[in-house]
Length: 221
Image (cartoon, rainbow, N blue to C red; front, side, top):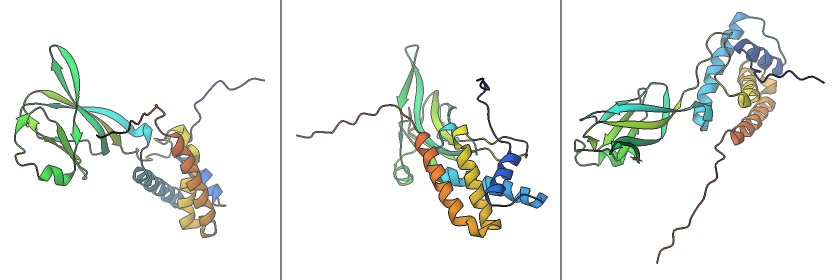
C-alpha cells in the first residue's frame, strides 16, 4: 500500500475557521462571521503568549554595543527575553560571557548606572516598546546576544497558513471553536472549552526542551 510521501499538511485560515464553525454545529454563511473568527483567532494567539513558552517563537537575536551604550530598544514583537550573554573577543577568540537578569527594583537601586565596564547585569522593561537596561554601561565594543520570545504572527489574509507548529493545529482548531461558541453556540461552550484545555495541555507537554537536567544539592558545612 502506497503512502503520500509528504509531511506538509497545514490549514489555511479559512479552513481553520470552517472547521471551528462545524464544531460549533453550524456553517459559516456570512462574511461578518469570517471577520469575527479572524478577530477571535488573533485574540487566541494573545492568550497563548500569556500561557507560557511556545518553542517555535523562540529566536536568537543580537545587538551591537559601543562605548556608552546603556539601553537597547528591542523589536516591538518581543514578548520577553529568556537569557543573554555578552560576546567579546579575547586574544582573538570569541567569548560568550554570562550576564545576569535583574528586576526593576534591583536596577533602580544601583547607585551609579553610568559606570562603564563590560555589562554584567540587565533589566528588561516589558512595555509596548521593550527595552533592555544594561549595568554597567558598556565601556567598549561588545555584542549583546539573547534569546527572545516573539509574538505569534497575526492571522492576516484568509489564504495564509497560521504561524503555529503543526503539533498545535488540533489545539488551534479547538481553541478557535471554543471562542466562537462564546458568540454563536452558547450550548456548546462547556464541552468545547474542555476539549480546548485538553488539547492545549497535550500540545504544551510535547512543546518543551527534552535535554537532560542534573540537580546537585548544595552541602554546607
